[in-house]
Image 1 (cartoon, rainbow, N blue to C red):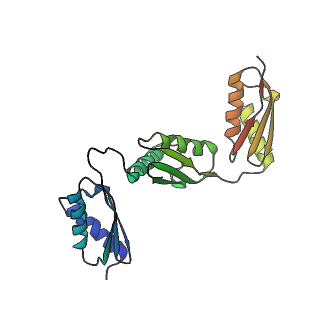
Image 2: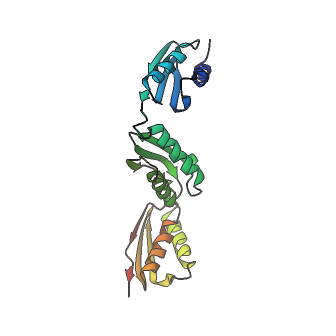
Image 3: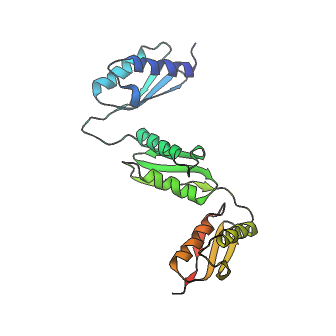
Length: 217
């Protein structure tokens, strides 16, 4: 008797073998011998051919057929295609820890989940997902790992600020409460304010930055 994994492999191989079926956009799942076909085909006859090919495989007890027909005149990208493009973009972006992020797509709407170490990784993942064609929206549910102590957060931010050549660290105050950081003080230019804010976001575990720095022009 075949295992579900063996049966899945055989069904996928049969779909690939069938010349009237483009198997690339067809998904196959098997539970207790019941095969679920999902994805998209270009015509109704192709849909029927995929079902017949599946029935030919020994060990198939039943078929749950969820394949949809997407005609060439309907260029809308399928959810699984959108998801693959997003995953590929994550893999190529060194700023995104793709092994820590889960991507879900439903009717073009993307939901990102998982846990990362830095805010910029969460932000970069959302930006990348939003660039993919046919994405209708993005829910960013990615969490940032629990932070070190508030004292450690403040010390790291102050060190980062002091390393900035274009910034007078002595004029900036930093208060940390868990992952929430409040910046205060005065700077002489807007770009200095932005430098300080970026330094705050660079600290591990920071989840929110309230920038109250004043600019003295």
